View 1: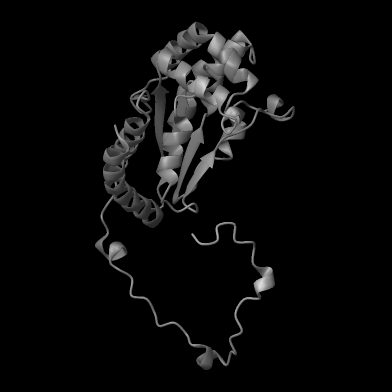
View 2: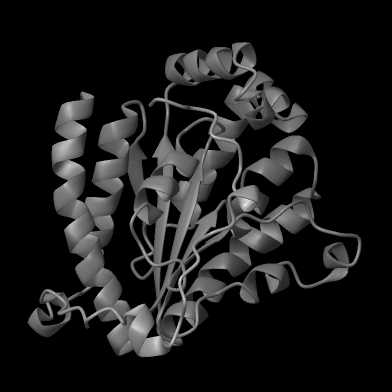
Length: 263
């Protein structure tokens, strides 16, 4: 998809997202969206596009660092529970509890017993979330080996993007087949009627972003509240005379240097 096509489509879906946002706020909906996928699959790009024109008081991103020594002794799901949405919130998990399904066993960060315990418990955990009123949506963003390699090479050669390549990312690249094996097991064993996996083709970044947003709009029930989207009548601006204020303007010494004079 070219940039012109994307720009045309995104304007339409952003208006629909605004309707969804208004419904979430008005009805106190609780939405949790899980984004999983290989490194460089495009999770961050999808999330950034979702948030571009949305209210940050309603939409929240959770991207947790590696667990602390204390967190390693907690119930596995505990560190994620504290980030779940309250009424009127949408939480986007940039990686989630599913680290234990794929990343941790491949990298040796958990024992085989811990992995099996997780695989047995996660459907029960998600059933509890849904029974409590959370709308849970799970996405796996799929990227081919060739496309991931192209993106890795781009990041490796661009100093602005090098921070995106961690030692774990590079090791995960080396263990491509192991990741595939655990991914397949995750999709097979944690796909349920109440919390199904939905796979997004991430090879075309623009289409992936639009398809994911369209999917969320299809899943979450929202309404067009005519009253909420009427043009706002702005009140008249107060004059300096009305406030008894002698306008002096901004002190020029406080202004930063104009780095682009004449532009």
